[in-house]
Image (cartoon, rainbow, N blue to C red; front, side, top):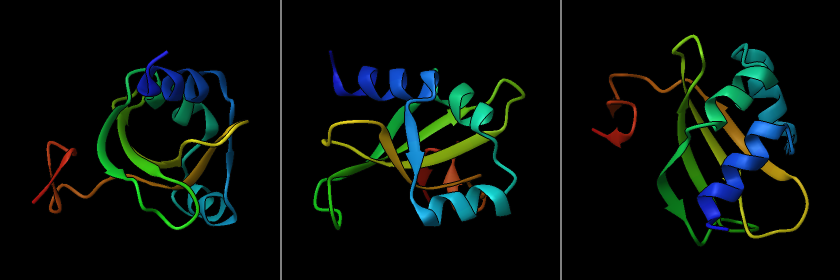
Length: 102
């Protein structure tokens, strides 16, 4: 299975966990687990961080069923649930089509 397919599958099925930071950000930004699952169905990798602090990670871009754009940074390459490092709604002033930095 390709890495992106594996990531999507984990997000869609709720097979993920939050870092303490990501949990706080989800609450502050009113991002529900359901929205993460929805965005995960067609999420695309828009940036790779192979040398991230603990494990390689990726920045994913996806949309909820209501059309809300979400960026989800997730740690990859470790067994078990996908680890969400942070998540947010991208700012249109900083991103072109929510997927490319200005």
